[in-house]
Image (cartoon, rainbow, N blue to C red; front, side, top):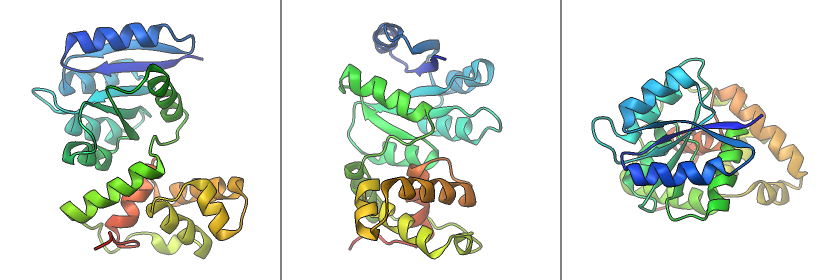
Length: 220
């Protein structure tokens, strides 16, 4: 079954270019195009795409608020992949906190873009260990508002807490497996259970959660 994608960008040339590129993929279909964030929220409700490619800086309603509304909607299941011309700036940082499953630069290769769409559609996060470390740096710079004290960290086992801590410090699944001397598949199982217990969408949200509740603190 093809992955349905909604394109959200205020620049028509960008949308046209993305549409041509994605339509050439046998397993990806362009469900529609949104000209701003408000249009994206409306079309997600109508079309229920698997993934939204979301520009951050758009008129009327920006990509951050649109992402928050889309990921907060009950029953849509739509994932958001942020596309930006800017490297990890404050806008992208807030988009990730709003519920985006990852981000990609607009000058990324076609193969990187289609890979990211497939990864996000499958329920994983497009958040590399390198990006995690830079996200942590943004937490240190901006400061992170904390979740209320009644967080459900006590529902995690000791091993699950260890796995979450290492993920938040920017370790890949393989590095977590090596550090804890367990199989990589076991790490994936732990991550899945962590997400389920904490009601989180993906590992991007798990990393953010770990910092916002103070499980791990930014360096410095």
